[in-house]
Length: 454
Image 1 (cartoon, rainbow, N blue to C red):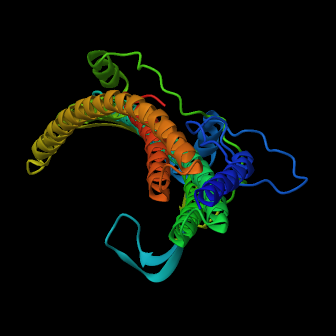
Image 2 (cartoon, rainbow, N blue to C red):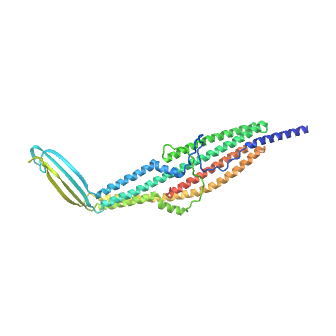
Image 3 (cartoon, rainbow, N blue to C red):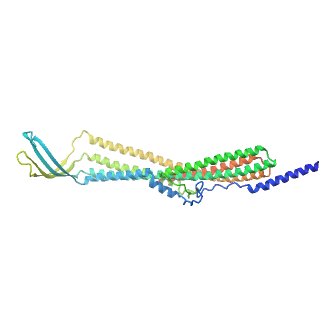
C-alpha cells in the first residue's frame, strides 16, 4: 500500500513537471516600462509603406498655416493696417469732380422767379486740404499705428494659444498610443495565464475556478484594449481639429516623452514672461494709442487751417444762350477757431482719459494673472518630474512582483488570484507612468506658453 502511494506521488510529480516544461516556452515575460518614443498608429495595412514620423514642429507649422483662428488674426492685422492708411489720407488733398444740370424758374442767388423755366449747367473740379491742425492728424495716425502694433501682439497671443492646444493634442496621441501598448501587453500576459490555467486544469492540478477566473481576466483585458483603441482614434481626431485641417492621415509620431530639467528659476521665468508675453505688450501698445487719442481730444480746442479751391465752367439760358459755358473759379483759405460746442470737447477728453485708466487696470490684472500662471505651471512641472520618477520605480517593482508570482504559479506554490493581482498592479503602474510622463510634458508646454514662448 505504501509502495502504491509512493508510486502515485511520483506519477503526479512527473505529470506536474511535464506540464511545467510544456508551459514554460509559452510563458512571456511582462513588458518593460512602456516605451514612448516614435509612437505609431495601431496597425499598418499590408504592403503599405511606413509614413514619415510626424514631428511636433511639423504639427505646429501645419496649425499656424491652416487654423482659422490664426488666419482671422492675420486678417485683423491687415484690416488695422488699412485703418493706418485711412488716417494718413489727412496728409493728402481731396479732389472731386462735380457735374450738375438743373431746370428751375428761380434765378440763381436771388429769390426772384422767372416766367419760364430755364436750364443751367455747371462742371467744376474741387480741391480741399488740411494745411495744419495743430497735431490732430499726426496724433490720429500715430494712434492707428500703435493700435496696429497691438493687433500684431493679439495675433501672437492667438498663435501661442494654438501652439499650446496642438502640443496638448499631440501628447494626447502619444499617451493614447502608449496606453494601447500597455493594454496589448496585458492581453498577451493574460492569454498566457489562461493557457497555463487550462493546462493545470486538464491534468487535474487546479480547480475549474482558476480556469474561469483566467477567462474572466482575459475578457476584461480585451475590453480595456478595445477602449484603448478607441482612445487612439479620439486622440487623433483631437489632433486633427487642433491643427485646423479637415483630414490628416495617421502617422507615427517622432516626439518622445523624455524629461529634462527646466533651464530657468521661478524668478527668471516670471521676468521672461513680463518681458515677452504678447498680452502685456498688447496692453502697452493700446496705452500708447489711447495716449495719442487723449492728446488729439485736447487739441480739439485748437483751430484748423484749411485750404479749398475749385475751377470749372457754368452757364444758364436766363439772359443768354446756355452754351458756351463760362469759366468759374475760386480759392479759399479758412481758419476755423472753436469757441463753444456744448462742452463736447471737454467730455471727449474725459472719455479718452477714463479709457486709458481702464486699459491700465486691465494690464495690471493681466500681469497678476501671468505671474500666477507662471508660478502654478512651474510648481506643477517640478511636481510632475518627481511623480514620473516615483511611477518609474513603481513599474520596476510591479514587474518584479509579477514575475515572482508567475513563477510561483507555474510550480504550483501560488494561487491564481495572486497572479491576477500582480498583473493588475503592473498594468496600473504602467498606466500611471504613461500618464505621469504626459502630465510632465503638458506642464512643460503650459509653462513655455506662460512665459510667452512657443
